Image 1 (cartoon, rainbow, N blue to C red):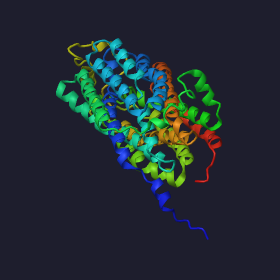
Image 2: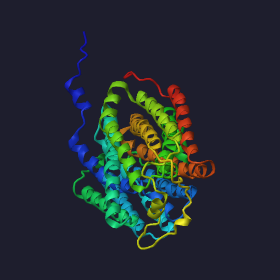
Image 3: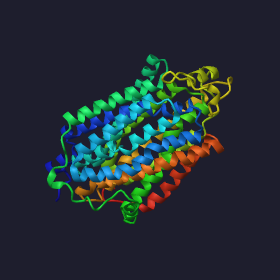
Image 4: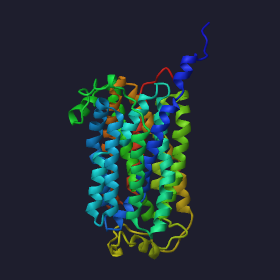
Amino acid sequence: MASNNPTPKETNEAKLDYKKIIPAFVIALIDLLGLTIIIPLLPLYATSYGASAALIGALGATYPVMQFIGAPILGRLSDRYGRRPVLLVSQVGTLLGFILLGVSNTLWLLFISRLIDGISGGNISTVQAIITDSTTEENRTQGLGLIGAAFGIGFIIGPVIAFVTLAASGDNYGMVAFVAAAFSFLSILLTFFWLEETLPPEKRGKSAKKEGANLKNMMAAIKKPTIGFLLILMAAQQFAFGGYEQLLSLFTLNRLGMDASANSALFVFAGVIIVAVQGYFVGKWSKKLGERWLILFGLVVLGLGLTLTSLTPHQPVPWYDRQALLQELDAPLLGETPPAENIQIELPDDGQTGWLGLGWLLVATFPAAVGGGILQPSINSLLTKEVSPDEVGSMLGLSTSFYSGANAITPLILGVIFDWLGSTAPFLIGGIILWLLWLIARKKIKITEQE
């Protein structure tokens, strides 16, 4: 009678090789610290220059639009020339983008800084390829989940660093950008001196002509039954979740009167949840229940989180002071003071403050963070299992391109909806989209033997 106990070989294949994974994880974490320092403040940065929700949405779209163009090119180049040189190039672009953000004194310079960062923004997709090179099919979801955990840790530490920097600099948003640039420079040093190449020369170049950074090859990928649906699912779920990520600071500003410090604390709370999910639970759930279950579960709970968020009561936080918040948004930016009367986002009136609105939002944040933390690594893990090893970098670059394409479209559309229909609509629309995706995914994603 056959034994159900795993063989030593199977046990070894199921375990992560942390000697290979840790350098990539640390570099991703340091790199993401720069990004997570900026994310909670960028909408408020633009608000202080008098930008509307629609224009702030356009600013949020600038980075992913350029990443949509650049990511598959960088992914293909990493398959041809190796992971390290491509990662270094993308990190230099990020550094230059943060420096320009720090010296920006007009809204248009903010746009240019995000454009530079976006066109070279292959950092994460390249690190994902490094993780994939260093894992097996049995532990790949866990390995990719660690990158999500790095993002979560970044969301814990990054907003804290932003809070301290703002306090030390007198609410100078430009100084926050310079601190982000310092972390970006550190990630370059770590990549150059510590990271080993994971794609040996003999495995390079085989897929360089198979995947390209053009619409034709993207459409060709969509036509492949399983790969096509997973790529569409990646884009569709991120259309919903991207609106949550990019408009949450405006939502809390408009709905609850939350300032930069309060929004930073909210991102810390979400980050703790993401770390727990992606750093621990996603690996265990994947091995026990499979990626199909993870994806369906992620769609359900993320849909619940966005729907609950949209229904957050209109009640300012207990410490809300409208005049103080206006003064914060009117704070000096590298010596310049935008007039507070130009602020386009409607702020709550003083009075009738309380805990109900904030309490409701914190409850809604839990399923939103859980679902958002599950979906991307689970979908990417399934994608890598559908291609040969020499195509992994190209496929992850293509996945990032779909992901970034959704991030580009989302703020443009939902930013306008925010202006026209109010702060509830973008989040409610996102929740509805996720429920519909769940219904479709149940039929489209096949049940595997693992389940």
